[in-house]
Image (tube, rainbow, N blue to C red):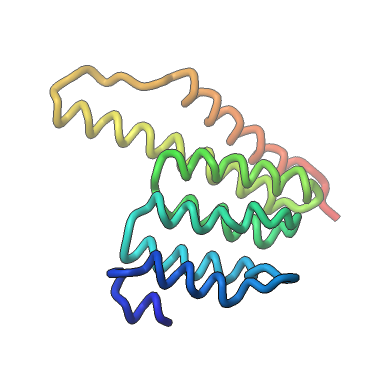
Length: 161
């Protein structure tokens, strides 16, 4: 609430104060604290700072797939290239932890499709604005789309319990 009321002016100091207040000698702030703060920081400050706060959840070393998914979806929602790359890694970890859930494969396919789609749109936009040829990292694009297809194929052809 304090981060919202401050309208982002002194959010870093307020965040540190709240985090220190919640963190005790034997306890850490819950992942929901970091994700809520990250969402507010994304709204009022920079994407880099928001990603830094959200990824605190990953440093808790909790192998909770729902928490990891929340972090992955947050990273994806930022639209930042480095955050989307990190989201790919997060969803790969989810797939390793929960290979028996089709959602694990769908999340991996979604993030790779999003990354490929964003890459194509960026290149097309660059071409329109600069008059340059349409150049894209085709090997990375091909890899992302191929992996996306494999994950979707696995969901469709695998027998789920």
